[in-house]
Image (cartoon, rainbow, N blue to C red; front, top):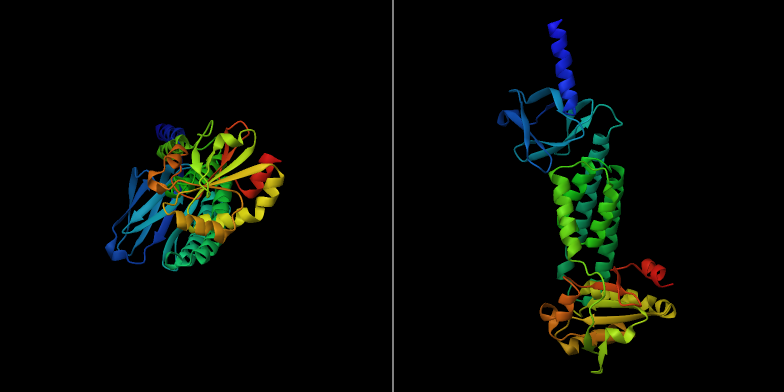
Amino acid sequence: MKYFLCIIFLLLFACSLGTRSVVVSGQLQQPSKVKELCVVLANENDSIGNWKVGDDGSFVYSGNLPMGKLLRVRWEHYNISLYVENGEYKLNYQDGEYFFKMLANSSLHNSFIEYKQKEKILMNAYNAKCCGYDTISDIHRKADYNAFLAKEFDKIEDFRLKAIHRFAGTELAESIVYESLFFYESNYKYFEKAIEALGDTIPNGKMKQAIFKAYENLKKKQLTGIAPNFILPDKNGKNVSLTDFRGKYVLVDFWASWCAPCREKNRALYEQYGQLKKLGLEVISISMDDNKNAWLKAIREDGIQWTQLVDLRGFKKSSVRKEYKVEQVPAVYLIGPNGDVIAKDPTNKELVEYVK
């Protein structure tokens, strides 16, 4: 009777900690070098134990693990994901890669592993396409290729956002965002979409704290409220002020002749300018060139018809760039009739929606 009550107590204690009894087993390819596997909380490095490995490289763990937690099982240079659900896991080895798979096919863990494998294929393909980009000397060819790469990366980000939606409310979604912080911290628009996709029910922990700290820090760097006024010369030397356009929607575009993505954006804007002008939208491009001749040459080459201004102090010294919190070009702001900042880097579709 006492033994029975003890078992009941242990089960209740395990449930109160949110743990589940699971079985994890596998076989390492090089057994003699590894004596144990280190198990930690993913992206937090807090150890939750070590699993012994036999002389033949086999291991079996049977016990409680924290339910709904993403773990990393580590040995040598390997760092293998394991999302804790109720069931049995088997270590697989394929094409030089280890991964855990649950014996039950319909599991979040298996779906996450499939996502990670597909993401790796997409990123490898994208990185291969990026090779040689920096060696392209012709600015127009470079602009074309940049447009191609941007579309390819958008496909990867769409794939990533769908996965965040798929795993919303779990540490799996958190992990996807956390592992992409280096990218998101310089791309507020993508970061904002990722935060929306995470949902309101994600678990508390170090990952969540790191994600939202990075997001809030980046949010503070965004231009909000009334857009700062500026007075800069156009190509004829006439000073133009933002307040000259009060009462109209204005697209303020920061660019430079030496920036391939900027040149590609010029051409895209050239194609759309007629439609935007009919809607009453004014466009002001502010060049960060410190070479007037290079700036004027780019205007001619790109066929720019809208208001063109320049800050010949260049990118680093431009006070206008600093006031607009521009850290890289191109950077585009949509300013409302009252002078308020409506959006940063709006898409063509979003522009039409805002001003129509």
